[in-house]
Structures are given as C-alpha cells and as structure tokens.
Length: 432
Ligand SMILES: Cc1cc2nc3c(=O)[nH]c(=O)nc-3n(C[C@H](O)[C@H](O)[C@H](O)COP(=O)(O)OP(=O)(O)OC[C@H]3O[C@@H](n4cnc5c(N)ncnc54)[C@H](O)[C@@H]3O)c2cc1C
Image 1 (cartoon, helix red, strand yellow):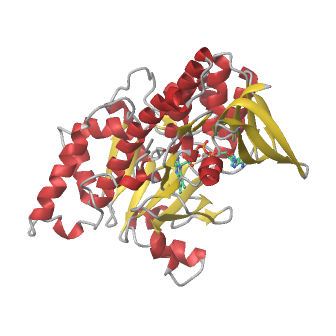
Image 2 (cartoon, helix red, strand yellow):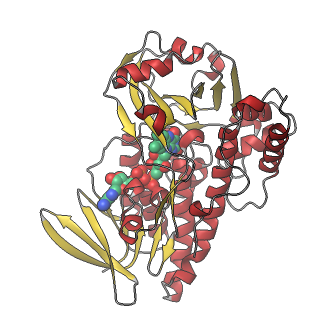
Image 3 (cartoon, helix red, strand yellow):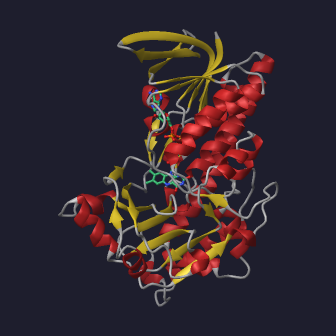
C-alpha cells in the first residue's frame, strides 16, 4: 500500500510528490489527463524560484528556454505605463533577479516527470471519483474510474491537488464561492504582438487596466513568437455583452490604448478559451487523513499571478505536517492543522492586497510610485506572503482608502468601487 495518494498532477500535486519522496514517504500521483495538457496560468512570481531550487527543478527551468521575466508593467487606459523591476527587492534565498513565463503544458509535464524521477509513482488518465472514508470519518484512500471500472485504492493519507476540480471540496460540500469576486476570463495565444514600446519592459508581464468593472487584460510572452493575451472582467459584464468571442475580445482590446497598439498586427493562433468559477475557498483545508493544496484548497483572483506560487508553497507546507503525521503515526486533523493556518494567512495577504487594489485602482499606481512603500509592494508582488504578521503597506492602503471615502472632493473619490474593505468576509475564512 502507498503512504499518500495525491489527486492531480499539476504544480501543487507534482511539488507535493517531490517533497514527500525526498522525505522517504511513498506516494502515488493520480492524474485525470494525459500530459502535456493545456492550462491557464502562464506567468510566475519570483518566490517560485525558491521552491524549484528546493526540489531540484531549477536546472530544468534554466534550460527549458522559457522567457525570463524581470519585472511587471501596468498600463492605464490612456496609455501611461508604470513598471517594477524584480532586482529592486532582493529576496532571501533567491539568487536571480528574474522568474519565468511558461507554456504550462511543458512546465506541468516536466514537473510531473521530475516528481516521478524523485520517486513518485505516477498514473495518468485516471479520474478520481471520490475520497474513501472509514467509519471514523478518516480518509483512507480513493476510488478511481479506470477503463470503465471502479477501483478502490487504499492509502494512509490523501492529498487533494485536483485544482479547480476540487474533488474533496465538492464531495464534502464545503466549497464557498467568494462573496465579492466573480470574474470571467477569455484568452488565446497570438503571433506578431508588439510586446512593448519600451525595450526594457519587452519581456515583462503587461497588465492593462480596462475601463469596466474589475476589468483588466494580461499580456504574457510564451515563446519568442507567441504571446498569451487574456481579458478579465466581472462575469456579469461578460454575460450582458452582445456579440461573439472575437467581438467581445476586440471591444475590450480597443478600450486600452497600450493594448490596442500591442495587438494592432496580431494574429490569433489558437481558439479562445474561457475560465470562470474561480475565487473561492474551502471552509477547511485539512481533516482526518487528508489535506487540500493549491487551487483545490483556495483560489484568489489571478491579477498578480499568484496561483502557481501558492500551489507550490502549499505543497511545501503541507508536506511538513504530513512528515510529522508519519513520524507520530497520527493522521488526525489536529496534527495537520498548522498547515491550514500557514496557508490561510499567506493567501489572506494576497486576497487583501487584491481587494484593496480593486477597491481603488489608482491607489496601486500611487503606492508603487511612493518612496516609502514601493519596496513593500514589490515584496508582495514577488510572492513573499507566508509567515508574516501585519503587513504595513496593506494597512497604509486601507487608511488611504478610508481617507478618500470621507473626502468627496478627493481626485480619486469617483473611482472608488463598492467593494467592502472593513474585514475579510467570513465566508472566505477557513474555519475549524
Ligand atoms: C484566468 C486565470 C489566469 C491565471 N493566471 C495565472 C498566472 O499568470 N500565474 C499564476 O501563477 N497562476 C495563474 N492562474 C492560477 C493557476 O492557473 C493555478 O493557481 C494553478 O494552476 C494551480 O495549480 P494546481 O496544481 O493547484 O492546480 P492545476 O494546475 O489545475 O492542476 C490540477 C490537476 O488535477 C487534475 N485533476 C482534476 N480533477 C481530477 C480528478 N478527479 N482525478 C485526477 N486528477 C484530477 C487536473 O487534470 C490537473 O492536471 C490563473 C488562473 C486563472 C483562472
């Protein structure tokens, strides 16, 4: 019998496999698709480098030919650009001033292979139907569907890394939609994108503000020729648009001068894809005999490219409590709980940053230009959200918003959105 079954071979599941094998814990990764498979989420934040190094995957990242990402750039609808360089903030334990933009089909394939090389058993094309529980409500394995047959596979522990498939969250009925965010993305790959007027920011991620409710667009280099472009808006905005995908996409491209310049000679090379049903949290990320990691646990809006970083760090922190569970031969929720607290506090910081960002868009550009707060903003944008207490810059942003709310003649007053910022809504807090 294997020690741990991991449902899903995305970045979270593969990183978990790597960590467990390094700890000498036998693990089996069950993946529904056959890699390579396409996936949204192509731009990394620099904190991922630390994990790639720890699991011995950095040499692959260096050799793979992925475009290097040295910074991030934001564009107002009228064309004004603001950018940051990652070398402005030196992250402890990270020895390179860049991260990567990736073709996820290639990244995920090789990360899964890497897990296999380190010792994970990997079976692809297997759909996990449900997690099996004993009479004491402890997870004791999974049921899979393979070649039309239902088969039970026992294990001492189960890790749900099924991404937005959220196998356990759905089974236990503990998935809570975010009460504020309900975004919708339409995206595709293009050739001939003019990546930047400014040579320095050519290989950066470019984020374009769109003059519509919570609207923005991403521009991410995938190879020298291919660029990924996505339009994100509030789902309601998409639903009420009259027209096909092409018309919808072009409508919003035209609404930002920088984006329409970048795409003026662009040729689409694949079909439009859509992503919805994101921004949620499970009520709890752990239980007797199981943990949930990556998107299977929680998803925050992707505006700051945080998803893969959260997936990798959640694997790291969850593997630490799994190690303790095996040492003590105790797989109870109590033993696993420290992981939940770590993930929750890190993801809450991302969430809060995103919420304040959407509350008042000009606030973000104001703060990244501030001498006092620029480096603190960079620290967040580079994914340093775990094991922190109060984050001073978030407090300062909140205070600033409250000031703008009170001053009706403030130049930003009309740009306040109706997002509540007083406290994090209860429904997105993981509870015991
Ligand atoms: C619009 C949008 C834009 C984004 N942009 C970015 C970005 O720029 N940067 C970034 O870092 N993140 C981004 N993300 C987030 C990123 O896509 C995810 O956070 C990341 O993929 C999470 O990794 P994961 O391993 O948890 O899940 P996944 O990568 O989804 O992997 C889960 C795996 O589980 C498998 N699986 C599912 N169900 C089952 C089952 N029943 N049995 C077996 N296997 C199963 C799936 O096939 C999949 O391979 C974006 C997300 C969205 C929606």
